[in-house]
Image 1 (cartoon, rainbow, N blue to C red):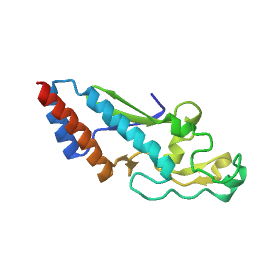
Image 2 (cartoon, one colour; image 1 turned 180 degrees about the vertical axis):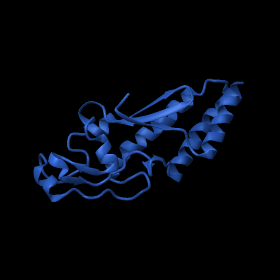
Image 3 (cartoon, rainbow, N blue to C red; image 1 turned 135 degrees about the vertical axis):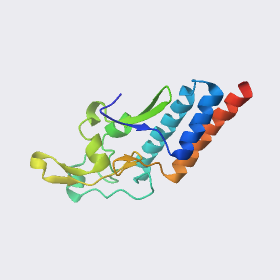
Image 4 (cartoon, helix red, strand yellow; image 1 turned 45 degrees about the vertical axis):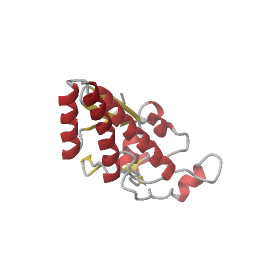
Length: 166
C-alpha cells in the first residue's frame, strides 16, 4: 500500500462496537472497516487544507527559506507545493483491520519526516517541524475525540444495517 502506514484498531469503545458488529454481521465487517479507513483518510486530507494536526493545533508555519524556494508565490500552502503527499493518503481495509497510509510515489521519501519532524537534507542540517496529518503521536495511534465520535457513528450505522438484515 505505502511505505508508511498505521493500523487503526481503536479505543476501548471502538473495539467494543467492532465486536458487536462482528457478532451481528458474522465475519463480514470489512465494509465497515473500509468506511472507517476512508473516513480517517479523508479527515487527514482535510487537515492539509486547514493546516492543523488531528487534535486542532496549527502546523508550524513555513520557514522563510522554504517560501523563497517555492514555485509561484503567496499564498504558500504548507505541505502542498505539488500535493504528492496529500494525494498519497489512502485508506484500505482487510478483514477486521482498517489501515490508513501515506507516502507512495514521489512522497515516499518525505511522508515520515513531515509526520514526525526531524533533521533532513544535506548532512541533516535542516530541521523540519512535525506537521501531523495522521492521528499518530507518542509512538501509537491517538484518535481525537471528535474523530472517534465519527468512527463510532460509522460503526453504529453498519451495526444497525446488520441488525435489520439479520
